[in-house]
Length: 70
Image: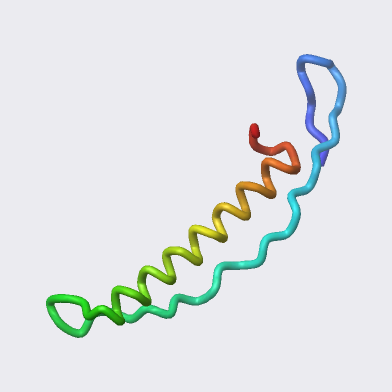
């Protein structure tokens, strides 16, 4: 993917970001009552932590390829 580098007046080749797998399907379910149970809370927290890990991996891959500042 080339783009114009106006500062240098030349085309510069961009680096491709390393592949990051898709986030897994959620394991949590909608709470049955007004207050979620501990199991429902724990499942939601596990989903959140897995997604957080995935987003951090994507950001790290983008930093490595130079798409984001370190």
